[in-house]
Image 1 (cartoon, rainbow, N blue to C red):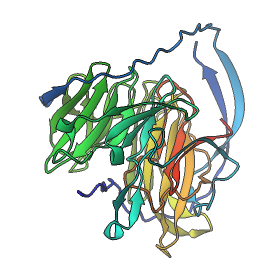
Image 2: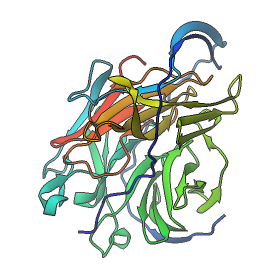
Image 3: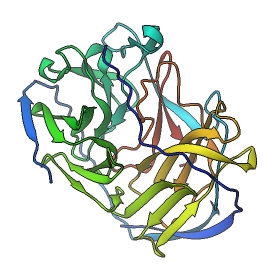
Image 4: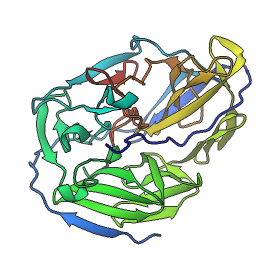
Amino acid sequence: MLDRRLAAVAGLLLAIAACGDDATVTTTVPPTTTASVTSVTTTATTTTVAATTTTTTEPVATTTTVPFVDVLAIPEALAEMGSDWMEEVFIPYGSAETDLGTSPGGEGGLLDLGPEYGAQGPDGTWWFLDVAKTRLARYAADGAFLDALPIPVELLSQGVYAQFQLPRVLAGGEFVAFRLGQGSTAMMLVTEAGFEEIEIPGYVVPRVDDGATLYGFDDQGAMVGVDPAAAVTFSVEWFMTQSGSRYRITLVEGGLRIELPDAPQPVDRILPMVYAADSSVGAFAGIQVATTADGRIHLLLTGAPESDESVQLAGYATILPDGSVTPVTPVRNPFTPSDPGSPGQLGAAFGTDLPWLMVVDVDGIRIYRPTGG
């Protein structure tokens, strides 16, 4: 089988210690590259979403005291998820249609690798790249099986292998995933009309989206945008949140650089990264990013202390719209023997205010939500 593991775009950091305090925050709740397309029409089950009525009220300003940190102190990973998170969905592996599949890989094929992650749509449904069963499996918000769409043979590598990764569901309900090749990227696009494979010249690793445009990096580390509707890529200076604010989050030698030009007071600062158990020890870490409709930016940080690379660090933090950052809280180790290796653990459905953390576990997929909102 072809190698399904994706080399994540990350960097090594030399971090130093710093101090922190608290801040008072007032929050207001507000009322080109041409691609070639191969189309394959399939019949998909139509899901009807009931209409809802929204009542608009006047904006309300609330003042709260939130933690403010000047250093990212990354804790050791937990064996099990702590009380800050709750398990919302569990979908087991198995041979039944309602179960997700596993396939051999790693260590000479002795490991059972799970799906290439999944994503939640605006209607609450979960879409999983069930590569072992060469299908897209759909589940309700509570994890109940809905249906599955077989991936057309024309989109399979060598007519057999589903080599797509990094799934996302956009604001209009479109599902996208990517297959990285030698100097090129293939994008799977699934709409009500069926499946399309869109060839994008250049190596593009999409990492975040604003509901319409995908953002990521090319093989030189340059920031790029992908417009799936127009089938083009383009250079960008900023990524965009779901709420329409510009941001840049960059791994730099001194730590993590956060730039928010649209904040009430524009933000451009570097937060050092240290080992939470000993702040005199720096930390190597990579990040995953997701944004929510309320303008917050969510971070999953995983790595190791400089003093001992065998120690697994894993933590979660939030960047508020004004640039203040909450302390890093521990989460369970997101890497398991069944993890396929893609950076797909952190995400957020378009139009929602809560992120999710997904773990491809040894017995099934587990999805967690923060309990604190």
